[in-house]
Amino acid sequence: MRYMIHHLSMAGVCIALVSGGIDSPVAVARMLMQGWKIYPVHASQEPITGPEGEQKTIALLRHLLESEGKLGELARENLSRELVVVPVAKNLALFTEKWNHTEYFIHMKRLFNSIATIRGQEINATHVLTGENLGQVSSQTLGNLGGVEIVTPLLPLRPLLAFDKVTIMTMARNIGTLEISEGPEVCDALGPSKPTTVANKEWLERSEERVGGLQHLASDCYSNSRIVKL
Image 1 (cartoon, rainbow, N blue to C red):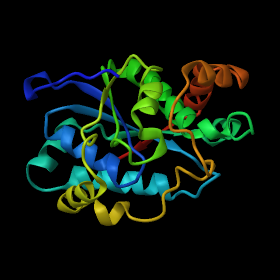
Image 2: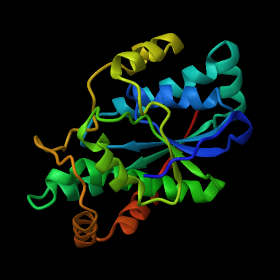
Image 3: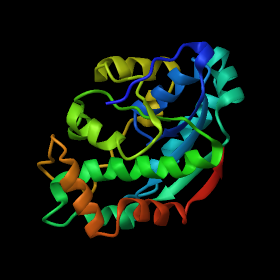
Image 4: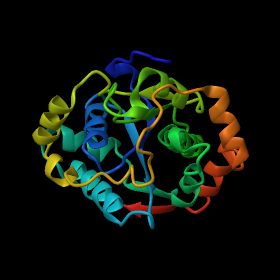
């Protein structure tokens, strides 16, 4: 796994994968406070799910932009007011077959990171920011995090990696995002009941090639993206 320590003077440009859940807006807020320039991307799973994920993502980012104090000041300076919404449902459904379903969540994160790479090339980003924290769900074991990050040249920013859920919820409450984020999670709509916790790189790559190849799937999703003004 790749890590890089940054001080405030080394803050850079990143793509933020924002889901509308509790974790990702907290991650965005923490990196805003470190001076990072942030370009948000939301992977929409409509029509498999409803519009709630996108609606919450928009509301959360607007909340940060409208916040008072230092956080709001930095958000208005460094958080892009263009949210890129990328439809992913059609291609995620390809990973629900008997032979690839247990790896669904890893394929999902690999697809999202590949989409982040495409957006990152447009704005010269160096990092991808997520709200992942170690061991919270199956895709966030050490092995699976490693299996995800290898698909992108963007370095990972995971400011919540070592925090437990209670602490993250407290952070969310303190910045006013918890109430907006609360509600049913939608990212597991197509997920398996018993997901794998140990990624196998060769098997993941073979499975992705069998349905067209990861880069093709990411490009196909991104070609249908749209911009939402915040």
